Length: 376
Image (cartoon, rainbow, N blue to C red):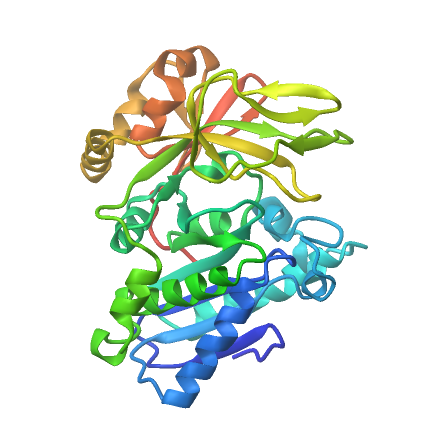
């Protein structure tokens, strides 16, 4: 097993028990998760908490954490694509994040070899605006099942709007992968929220037994868990262009209801108004970042149930019979844009596909629900 200065700590049960891998500080200005994991590791040691499973806490961007920046050269949470990973071994770059990525990738592979699983990858984050805690996932059924246990707001499909997040890459190999947004960057409550979430995750994954955790009900109360979880999907993203001077209007908070036409931001001196009714999501109040804000809406229970049935029954194979839709690989469909307009992206979502890329005159949709495969 590789020993690394990235490891905040580790706890080993047996090889055949569940394994939780937690990342903290992937963005260097988001330190709440790092502090929370240090507190948890100390508590485990001081109280000699019995473990059934395996637990690894990993620091993300070491250099950016030192300088309290989101990143030094490039966003460490936007470079996890297969093409970039394949070049890592021989990659030579002036960007410090490439070396960080090499180290994290080697550590992940080592953990996957040493343990049998199942594996749960959790990534701790905070936001620049005030927010209640929430979870982000790629919309696979195994991710849904696990996140539903927490009764927190869940955002589906954010990976369609972000290029190269770490969890999206890991999810492509069938592992449960979710992001936890704990609160505002500098709010001490964000540390407490991270700790509460990880303790609950350790119980719900089977890594520790419920009776082992004395403060279980307290942790649930801290997170103000809803019953049941509400799921949301993204309707719109405002992307900040290169050299654009973007400034969010003051006072917005995450999950705030907004109206079409409402003033949201100023870009290069021009007013940006909401183009639709909805719920404001992750308004940007920091210097670095390309995502100005998102607009989301709640997903109906009917759609969640229907999509689950469709995927369990394997009805996604019907899509391959339609004109203009071809199988590009085991998990990918190549689609004529005319057919994509007829079906709409929402239909592909229903069958478990996410919009991936446009190549030439074709769109490619990739299946979210996958069997476990070796990391490469």
